[in-house]
Length: 456
Image 1 (cartoon, rainbow, N blue to C red):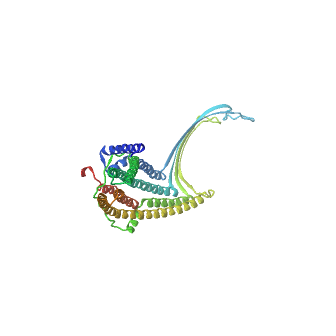
Image 2: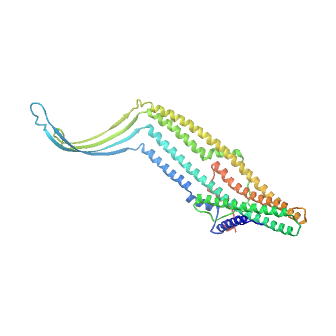
Image 3: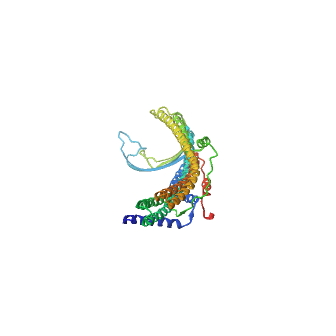
């Protein structure tokens, strides 16, 4: 007998399932490429990376400015009051005693053009290195978006498949439960068969609730990337064909060592640290600038009683030779050398991690290819087992528990087959991503494995 609690739980699962089914039925079907195009316009992580890259591009202009002239304009005005008395015998007709007020005005322009500044030259090179690194960071974010979109897309599909399989499984168990009740009433079966079928049914209802929750979470993972909850996603073709890997692991490791963006970014960091050593060492070198200035100083009075109007212009060269700066230059050199060692270690860390990730991705893809074929055969065998077990139950040589177990194994095999197909497609993207050769065309290739509207 179904309890009141069971009815409440079952009603919740049915209501949630109806909601998800409504979502799936509404709206235009979206493919993997559709979701990716939507993510390109709405993913905040990619937008942040793009803004960071655009900001980094300004470093190029800032580096060029280090060897361009600088021009400054200055101006000032002042008002003065004086009270002067002269002591001693005699008088000076050119010196007026007493109170006086006068104003002064001045303005000037000075310009400086670097002729030789080693530090500035190195900083220009460092700016170019930073821009190169920023470009790689943006490209890495774009690759990451492809991976994230693919993973979340197939997470939704497997969650939907789990719901569909549980619905089918629940229907099969319910049929077995009704049959067990009928045979028990006529005395050809025991209450154990009824209780076993009832327990399986209660369990699958609980699994249905969890599956619906998992499906809703997966849909919202796509929303975090695209800004919208997907309504209906294209599913994978039932006759999907897996392609064996044509290149060995060593070849993929070689490709990853040359193209993985994490390695290339760390190599840029190493290059920047080498340039920083050179820039720090330039602190010992002299600098030479061309300088020019023009000033105009006007005053309508002074302590001597006379005003003045002075105009002056200068042009020349300015040489500065650093002699002693408290040891700061040598300290900066030592610091730069240590930072270079750290950058070398970081390159090695990135290289080893990339090697591990490539090996893992290669083995996972190779395994998923084999699993698809194995689960296809397992599904066929499970279906045969279900059919033979049902026949055995009808003739009395098998129990209802045997039928339930066979059905459970069949649905598990079907779920595993679907999961292995999704893993196969996702692992293709993961291997290409860690190798640094992933592109939007790879998504287009996977899109060909989906059942699109025009295929129906």
